[in-house]
Length: 88
Image (cartoon, rainbow, N blue to C red; front, side, top):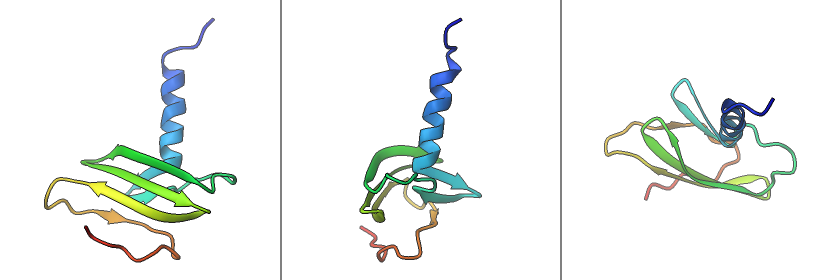
């Protein structure tokens, strides 16, 4: 018996949730990074009506980019030691 269609989809969903998670309407970048993922980056992952990108360097969140429709309310949970948020 071979793999079924759902197997790769479940694997991709697991990786997606390690990179970004939305919980109770709050976006959480890198919620489940495993040890050894000191440097990681993703771009244009869709959550709700937004596309999000983020980067970790040396174990710290250094960048988050959000592309959303105008007047979209965005709630995000950042690590306590994250750099100040800049709105561009």
